[in-house]
Length: 459
Ligand code: ARG
Image (tube, rainbow, N blue to C red):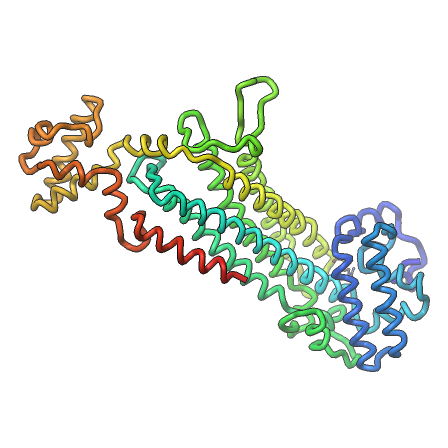
């Protein structure tokens, strides 16, 4: 008979059993379920709700069950529906009536809310470590490339020269925000719902604060109806994970472009590339493509969860069982993508020369050339027109601004002197942008230093 079978006269249809059972995916919360039950039992004993010797036997047996699960000795049963009833069933099989006292003052509704919060707290911590590792690699790589000049793009057109360090640090900024978002989600996940009961709490004198303390929660939920029916933290996490994937995906897109024959800015390590089954010459950036692709499934889980929750009246409804597979898959996906991405970046080779040569194309120093004229007293609009004419001349003669002779410059404006060459060198363009946030080596070195401190202090 089912643990809830008292008022039933018929067994569940076997197809129904299969349909509504969640053990195939919620078994991964076995540890949290057992830890939660141990804390609950401790509280029941302490409050005199169950005899102390029952409390002790329950705790001891739960610990044994944990060991047995971890050594593969336990087989879960679909008919017992979910991880909560599977473990309770095993407990009762082992210690009979004493085991039946564990569920006093508790419902699976607050139990599952507790387990998922505990499980996700651990996952958030793991993912934060992975984000931190990625930031470390990016910041170190930036340190080696503060003078690696490359084109900066707008509209995918050469715009102004930047450095690879400047580009990499843009991603460090994104991952800093991602890290903060995870910490913020953690705060709202770190609230203990047990004691909410099915929805209206309980008449037993539970000590919820004691349970929260035992399990390392910072606070308890303050309304039992909210306690059992809130899944905002799942949605928040999915949203934070989606944003991380979006950042990884943008970066992957760039790496795929940089790795192409047309760009050759970077070369992926063989260990992070794959070949073609037909074209022997191929070396494809599959890892980057797969991460870009997997972004879709994480977004999908966020959308699914928002949609699952939108029509659920208070309090618990079985729809909420749909919270797990998506967020579990999202967490698994991030835990694969982040380390692969980090190693892929860490092992790729940067072709500084190709980046530099690409930065020489597209008249990216045109703004600086106009600014130089302005500094010589030419009004900006006139300077803009003069450089415009020179650019047109360069296009027609297949030259760069830097390659023009002083005579060619002077033919358009007599203001030009030898100084123009230094003023429009890529190095000058980059390093005179000393304003905070800009690409100058001076500023970027300072940012790398402060990032190191920020990363070291991240907890
Ligand atoms: N497996 C269920 C879930 O994941 C546990 C709670 C079930 N509660 C209930 N009253 N059916 O949400």
